Image (cartoon, rainbow, N blue to C red):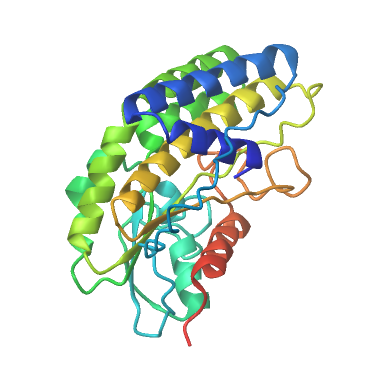
Length: 305
């Protein structure tokens, strides 16, 4: 994620969860409005405050990282959970009602990393509730690695994608605004999901993937600039809430980490987007986009030796 978002995250993490989320939503909604109306960006502010060093108190022993850097092996048992971004919708050759694609990032990552993908239990359209009801069964105490992409459908992204892609600017922006307001209910849902995953796979490391920004919104003179800026703001808000929920789990000792993915130079509006720009798969990654997700996982976890 960009440095500005990282500073915002550190500042928000100091507040209670309910106020953090409200502040996050307010900040991002305000940013979206300012961007759409004025095309101006605010100056970054530092959330860090200097701490006086004490020579009287010894430096505490570092807390072990709850997400250990364990090497992958050919016998690493991997399970993928989540929504259409994990199922591979838009990647091509999808099958079944869940739109599972052989180009989905879990499949590509497992192949390139040389590990055992036990099952990709993800399903297009899945919400946090759907994951709890239908996907946890894929996990057990033998599971070594879990990836999960979830949260977008709780905000009604399908309606946003349909109306925004159809050029219904007013409906699109209204739905983006509604999605921002729904961010307030998402933290508790994510806490429930992440806790359930950790309980169902007690020996696994868990990687939560973020949602890539969809648009190159760098040109304020572009005809779709307002829509692009609003959708990107909603995506940033969603990712920030996901990141905060993961940070809370990690602070509690869960072997969990957040993985942002950026399609910089390949968003909608760029010359070679890694996203579908029309049709029923609009706003979903192409095969090249899912390959980027897989590449980021390999950067984080390595390959089997």
